[in-house]
Image 1 (cartoon, rainbow, N blue to C red):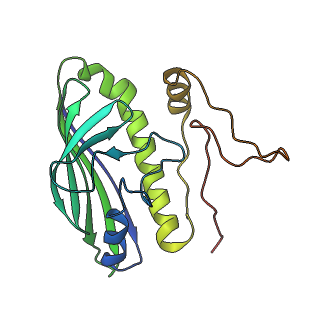
Image 2: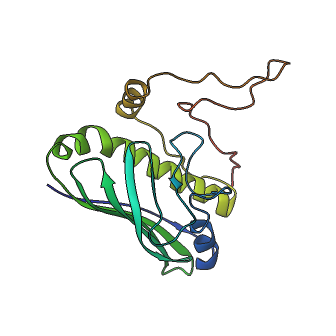
Length: 190
C-alpha cells in the first residue's frame, strides 16, 4: 500500500523565520513539535545527517538536512514502514512562507493495518497540533485550532498505559498537564 500524507500551512512571515523555527526541532528549545501533548521528538544528537531517534514507537534517522529549509527522516520502525517523513519550508505566492510535512512510504506487512487504523489518525492529529504550535510561535495566535476527533481520543486512551496526574503546587494550583491533556497555547483574537 502506497501512502502519501501531506500537511501544510501558510504563514504571513518571511521564509527565514519559519526556517529558524524548523531548526529548533528536537532541541532543548523546540518551538515546533507539540511535546506538551504528544511524545517528544528525541534525537541522539543535534539535527544533522545520521542523527537517530524518534517519538513514541516511531524510529528514524536523519538522511537529509539543510538548515532552515529541510529535514528528512528515514523510518526504521515500526515494522513495515518503508519510507520517510520530512519538514520543508517554501516561499509562498503571497510573499510569506509555507511549512510542509510530507510522509511518503510503502506500508508492508502489519503496517497495512496499523497505518490506517492506528498510526494515521494519531499522525494527522499530531501534525495539525505541530502546525498550530508553529502558527502560535510565528504570529502569536492560532486562527482555527485543530481538534481531536473521537477516534484519536479513544486511541490515545487505549494506547497509553497510565496517565500522569497534573503537577500541583503546595497551594493546589496546576503547574503542568499530563501527557494526554489537550493543553493549548495562549490564543488572541484578531
